View 1 (cartoon, rainbow, N blue to C red):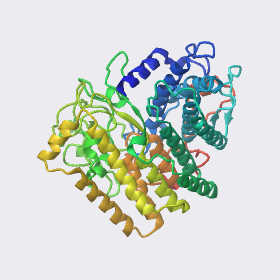
View 2 (cartoon, rainbow, N blue to C red; view 1 turned 30 degrees about the vertical axis):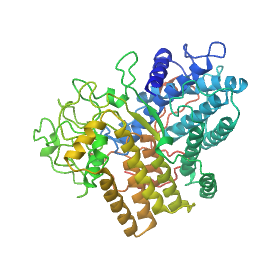
View 3 (cartoon, rainbow, N blue to C red; view 1 turned 90 degrees about the horizontal axis):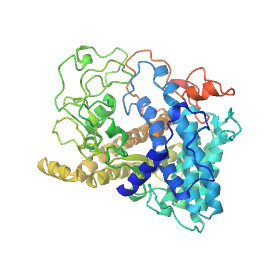
View 4 (cartoon, rainbow, N blue to C red; view 1 turned 180 degrees about the horizontal axis):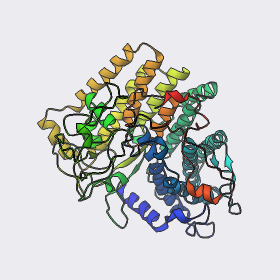
Length: 545
């Protein structure tokens, strides 16, 4: 699989656009029907999609306290200029390439290629609606139209659902061949069908707020069809390699943090503190502590001499989430960066391909841990059951919500554990667990029991939903788009850590349009603010913070 990834990423390095100075369609490297090789193009689309996921996932993690957001107020947390590459990657890159590939594939009876292209296009379109709201589609890829108008988000959702249905038709058709390089499923068509159906489940769950009856019927049909992602082997993930150069195909989070000087992302104090207090077995895989004793140097962590802000509740984490070296930042903290690059808590083994935390307390370095061989957890087996549990509670779809919750947590644990034991860190993990009498299964069972006891004691359906949402949130490390959707859909987990500033402004319900779109399109109109909900989000503003 690593060999396939290297091939795919070499494709990307050869063809990727240096994008931010291009108009929507003026990509000189774009393939056309006259110069393309269908397998080459299919590989590029798969790799470009991984970049798209990373781009839309990042701000969602930061807004929902899965990762630290380095701005004092919400209006600065996601900036229009910072979204230019995200926009160009989607339109001038993946969507334009898919538009080229599909007619060629269907004409040549390469139906697997067409199915993959359609389902990835549906995902990109839905993600863009989820983060921007109304976006161009009908006119967006017309080479004669440099000022495309936006389509309604609800319309694009309908287009995406139709694309998924057509993709499944493609997958079930007799094809001349499969993908030469399938970077996600290695040629297993049944897994692509399951991915398509699970993507549909995600779409229908988002729509439940505005169309509960339609979502209920369609989700029940998916349950009856029994073709959803349901096991680790069916997970929809993009796998990274360990090359540092030519091309650098390491996980982007690893590449940004594992260097001689460290640095990179600050982790979320609230997320780490919650996992530590809940004795979550995944914490040693999620996070790597470069120090295991809390700093007492105010020049390194300024907040250690400050009082907890008055608007924080007594239960809110602040400054130092534990007493054993977890070193992150509080929500919307924009303080300066001290020389702590080799001290702050880093991305760990899962999903970034870094170090497993065995209490070593040593700095990160090049090729440490799994050397960047991480994954993007896009649609995982546990996610399916969390979504079905939410659906059972809110729409009364088929299935027992408590049983689905237990299954979801156990599947998430298994997904992480499977990754751990297949990594370059597996030997170190076995040695550490044996030396410390750690039995993974026992830790998981204790964790699950605590979750189920809390669920059974929850007095209302809303309280039970909060437990489902909270556990889903803890499973979403590395996937900000689903964390962002979950929070806007439910307003849960409740009681997320407040912003450090008592008045950070209203929570972001959709992003500003990118500067490149607004400045170059006469039909584009920038939003007055980022409080405009996407079409499916009809929740009250006071649900969020």
